Length: 54
Image (cartoon, rainbow, N blue to C red; front, side, top):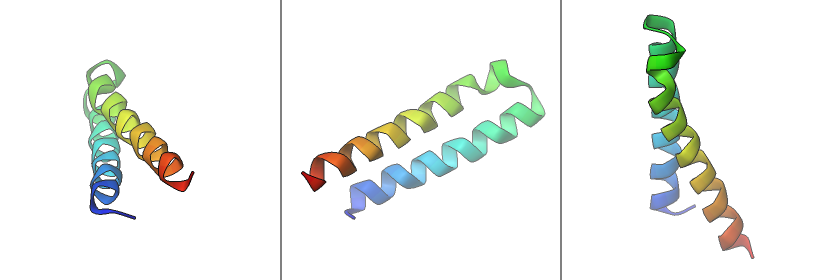
């Protein structure tokens, strides 16, 4: 796993932690952005992992 992949995975985890905190603190409407950014980083990580395998 390359450094960029590790950074993407770390951003995914951090974004999800922030999103969960925001959901508990202010609700789902305010936490939409961090959760979606976390999912974007996760999908980007999976895409890069699949493209390097082939």
